[in-house]
Amino acid sequence: MRLLIVEDETRLARSLAQGLKAEGFAVDVVHTGTDGLHRATEGEYDLIILDIMLPGMNGYRVCAALRAAGDETPILMLTAKDGEYDEAEGLDTGADDYLTKPFSYVVLVARVRALLRRRGSTGGAAPALRVGDLVVDRVKRQVARAGVEVTLTAKEFAVLEHLASRAGEVVSKAQILEHGWDFAYDGDPNIVEVYISALRRKLGPGLIHTVRGAGYRLAPADHRG
Image (cartoon, rainbow, N blue to C red):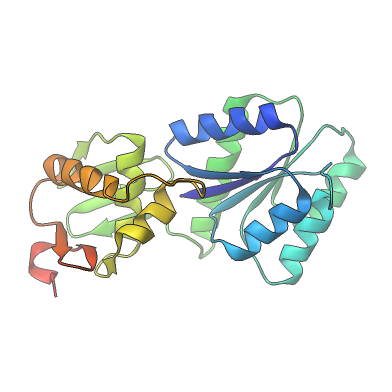
């Protein structure tokens, strides 16, 4: 899953990004409200962590603009303010949850997961993906095949999650990179092959199929197309 952090406190933004990447999320970071609105509009994100006090355009205005444009991406607002009127204003502009600084990182991750679960239960991204005998739980970040749990690294999970979300379709290396790596990644795209190989080894045969010159398809062996 891909997250966007819009936070002008550089150290906090960096710390949150590092922690969430370790949890297996792909994370983009911007530091102004204007950049946040642009990135949220141009990209596809599963959740946005949005500070209120931002240069250029405050978080209230960013949130209101996204909702006015029909963007229903879950938004978790962060602020150094403390008061019921501030919280009410954030929620009234369309935010889904609200966290006051200073906050516990553990609490933030729990709020993120709760919002992603809620999105799945209300018709957004499905919390659990099933492809044949494979189950990918996007919220608990667990994988099982034929009832047996499979242990994956955070990045392996990100790659598999994207393939499972588009089961039966051909997914290119570029699309996998866009989902599983942050916006600034400029390394070798062949890194995808390393993770595909690892997934095949851990998951076993008959699931991830190479479509030569196009990418990869996740499908049971009898539905390769």
